[in-house]
Length: 356
Image (tube, rainbow, N blue to C red; front, side, top):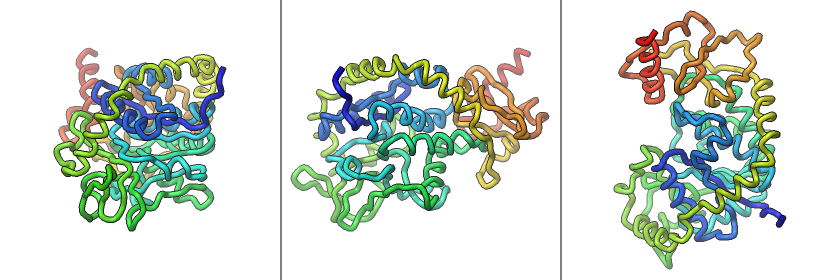
């Protein structure tokens, strides 16, 4: 068997619209780096990593990248992660050539999480250490519903620690942008010799950033980057088919399956459980907490001595935590102001109550 390349890239995409985005992300990446494997973890591979097909909120998907990274790093010690809603507009030299254990990109959006302003959707890591540290930070927390931003918060917390080695790619003032969207940074857009510029800096990567998968701000994309992106997508069409690399990854993972399952159960049996008093929560869900872990793995969490109680809601399965067991006996239903993730959960809980 031939030796695997040291470097690989991956993204996670569940659902047809997200997979279509991921195909475009992969294709534009391959246009500049055809020698690097780029794995799209679609629903089939998502099932391999979670042992649970049902997904109740996007946090389960975005946080899973830490588990996937820790696993793929055993095959490829240098990994790039890109969100599916990314288009690569030029060679990602700073990400690929950085010697740092973790290389992150800037973000002008704080999500209300404060400094440092980093984006978890574009990063590179060498070795397994970062991925395991990120896993520990994400899954040790049971928190109020945060939308999709526990991954962002946990990454920022890690990078605030003085002992955690990382490099943030500088942006602007002549440095290339590696994570840019239409609303960020003043300056004119222009294309010179097939290269997009914002002000005096090149733009290597476009991040649509947020919103529903089927509406990623194409209508708000300025004419210059839109024209370049469409031209690159035309050239990248031969790379849209990702089936061969997906099959290759499935073959690589197959002999790792038993070890992976044992490792995930052991991890969740020992992971500490803590909560946060500094995070916002809708008033209707006061006292109710959750994890970003799929219930398939969250079931192994050991609550002995933590003071927490939990209740499994299904389908789709989700563990809800509270320090007061009475708070779990009946969840608040049909609150119009609840965030989207809870709306589906509470709708299902209402159906279950009606059938009781």
